[in-house]
Length: 342
Ligand code: LMR
Image 1 (cartoon, rainbow, N blue to C red):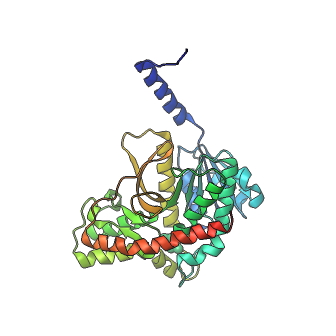
Image 2: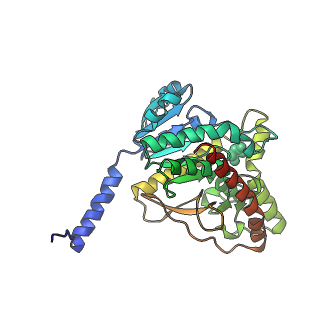
Image 3: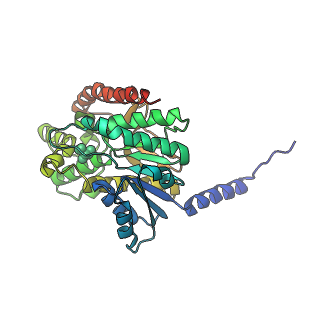
């Protein structure tokens, strides 16, 4: 009987060969909703990422113009564009990463969950197209309400036999970006130097920044901590109010989305010595809920590992207990919604 065996050096050589092949791979990132407020800024930031070879823009209108504009920037990614629902599959074919900022934004007085009816359809269409033309792509959702849309997308992908929990992400990076900014202001230091996990979901009290885990440590008292937590939880609403009817966060969301996609790419390319960690809303068992945002370790196949939650302080434990039933409802709403489609 013939069995193929590798000697130790041959095995190492093969592994190195696989890694090199991965690094050389022509990496395609597709943005669905690329002509919108988030989409344009996100596409601009992705055009600055030298690890992307092909940047595909898709939207229902104005995609050609945005693509022509971006394509004049002297950076390496090649820009392609597709317009309308009919071209969605064509756009996504060959994607390694599909990032979705498409959908309607909130107006003052609205909650993220009020967007479900208007935004679920686009997420479902994307999930169907991904299943059909790029089932092994990483799918990263910005479309709100993230807490409910991500479970819907999971169930649509499952119904098409193309769900891999390691490859579906709700982007919650903006909550981390806000926590770093507000804590940086409080500590009077560069926010880029701060590390702070934000767990839970992406809406109101489901957003829980863990100031007990920040590095450098948080120095304020309990009331300042409560104030900062609340500011992070209400960060989205702060922008919605300030924009007074013209939408929600676009630039900071684009920054956050580009950072998250950048980390997914680093994971795929597998070039870093240190682990690549981002908080994201993913299927997980760190709590009794099916989905939860927490730090995840990224690698070439998506999620490599989801570490257990750290030890929380008393206030955070209380807030975690408070958010679980709210997040459970959001997730259940998604499961119910998806059931009507499958
Ligand atoms: C945000 O956090 O800014 C986004 O989720 C948009 C919103 O509606 O708040």
